[in-house]
Image (cartoon, rainbow, N blue to C red; front, side, top):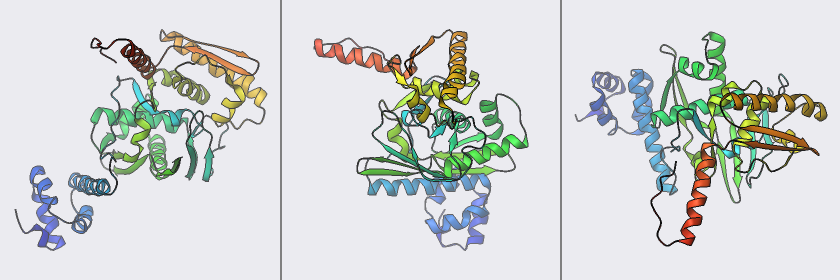
Length: 352
């Protein structure tokens, strides 16, 4: 079990390929970064993925030594099968546009300023195109895969991705689209500035693809953890979302899912900017697109035994709807916090 670190690369690769998984994991821990990087493209794919994990672990560990409190793995809140935790920042902005205009967001953008609602952060995007609601559909499913597997590298087949995002169908065009979307999620540079500190990076930090088995191995950017902490995220009902017909209906569903008190008036002009609308006639946008989206939301909610009513008055939209998973949790937490102020001793409450 010794001497691997002194072998020539050809001999090293040959010996590594002979090892079982347990011995392989043990040996690569003794090799330096240069050896691992040189050997990685020459060994079997499964072993190559183990090397990627080892290199990423070393990189994360080194980062931890430099900056405390940076998580090694993105920890997502546990939710039910049809609920995906998503950062409010993504849902309350035009980062994932709801524009219907074909090709409106297909051009490259550089330092494109993202309009946000109720956030103190300054957000901008640099990418080969803007994000859209189809990209958010994919991201929500990847988040659910991350929850299920709960490991740094998430392994999922293209078939599973297509099935979960499209419902059915499998073909070259869909595979090409998924690949392009994953490339965007990895390579797009999102800048989020909170006061003196800024984050610059992609949503995915690594994406690997096996062209033979049609399997993706992905890793979320670990430094997005603050967006999923405390009250910064909302549980999105993906079952409801998949039944919605338009991008605007999906965007409104996500936006109002983040609001505990959804009946507060919100100006339609504000929603126009936040949703990334590109319609030149805002009055027609309200009369046609908003009306259709709200009607669709009301129908889908009713079909699923949930409440969604709305009213437009004096340029404001009023919505009354069933609470989301995270909102119910927030309400319960407030009740418990309030009762603790009144009584020194409290019974144990199970919060969901």
